[in-house]
Length: 436
Image (cartoon, rainbow, N blue to C red; front, top):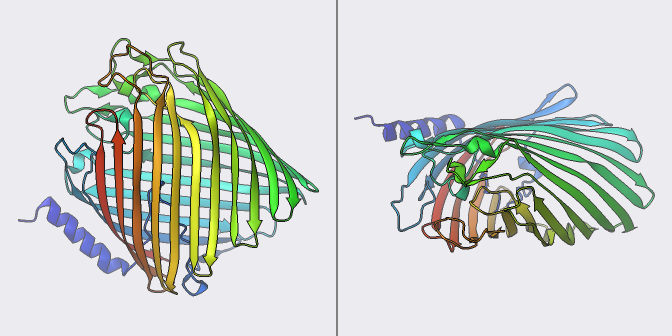
């Protein structure tokens, strides 16, 4: 009998035959994979169309996921084979002055297990460019539209029968001016979030649209070039979140669980950017951030923060990338102001042969849910703290300029002090890519 699973297997084999061997492993955001070790002999050439170079691609990813709902081990766990189809392209201008770039990516996912509750079609687009005004001054900005889904491990939609789908519209515009050793960059980043409501297994509705909001982040950065390899800088950002309406905890329309999550705050940073003969490049900073909420039930959040971004090339064949960051994230948890998120990741790529690239990465995140209101009725009447860690290893084989394949394994684990909210996820990804 030709079952749904057999159909998926047939589609996979058909895609393999038509695609040759083309893969690009798309790692999770927490895992650092630089994807820069490809030699010129295997680099994508693209299609030259007038003043633009168009780089089309088609990825086909075979995934095995051991825990598609990111459930605690004490609960029923469902695994699945997942087929990902990922057409996309990049278009870059070839102008001597100014620039214009387009990025288009998709992820069309088909699940073998319970597809009506898990299938999704993600879309990410971005148009950005630079307008050169003077020799030392230019505007840069962009617009992005994304139609994507939230991870099933998110605490903000744990009761949803299917994924939480949402759209983002991102607009950013900045102007940079250099004055000898001094530089100034000022502008604003604006993000619009629009969420779809989600049904539960009991056919009730989670009002995820109460998370709809605007976020405004004007900022100014002042830099001073100490010498050609070092730049000291200070940066100040103002942050404002404006929700369309009061937000229900986890989207459940229960009396007493709605909050006015409008907030304002700032982030002040000072740091150093460096470029040591292309051997070590990066920047690092330390500062202070603060967020105040309109709802008097939600306490203020503040603390020391900063970031570190390092790229190190210990040999001509090896690249190491490290990141550390700290920020305040939004949440819908009952009686919680926000999440103080601290993350660190490390990734390594090594060119074993010109067409064989090995990669490995690890990551850790601490999510400290701040401002818990004593006496709030929750499953666990305490501040929530999540420790999330994992890693990935992979090998990429470049057949030629047009075809490549990649095999990768990813592990993710969450340890939390809330009952039935731990999880472990194992993923095996066999990817194929065709590009021109």
